[in-house]
Length: 166
Figure 1 (spheres, rainbow, N blue to C red):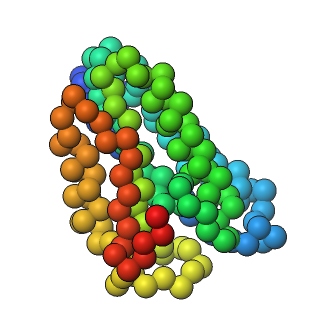
Figure 2: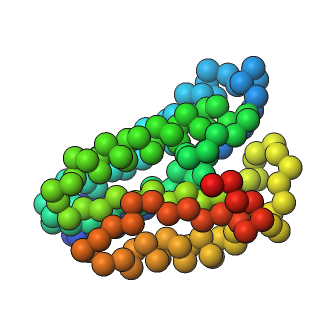
């Protein structure tokens, strides 16, 4: 892979990408469902598969996935999105089990409502002024990156103060 010719050591991999297809189930096409699985579950799988060998060779590293709160709590109209994010959580829990005897740590960061371009193409009435500011979400990620190698934050939830679903 070209990643390894550019980077000698891979210390941290952050999967923050995804797609949000939010539609009632009767309006959801099979293509919408598959696209959600492809972007939100298959892509993180391929990302981890690409970088994990280097981390295993180093015998250390940090994998951070951001399934969002819909990876933990269901929402009406989010069948495809929820399935992909619940799948991501399950996949990461299994990978964490595989890596128990290494110093490679896995963290799921459940962000709820971050004011980002993610919402630009989603047909929902959202109040961006009540969402988490993107810079604050970045600080949460940085916090996770700063944790000592002797421990792991398995999961962290960060939601807007006025929208505490968990």
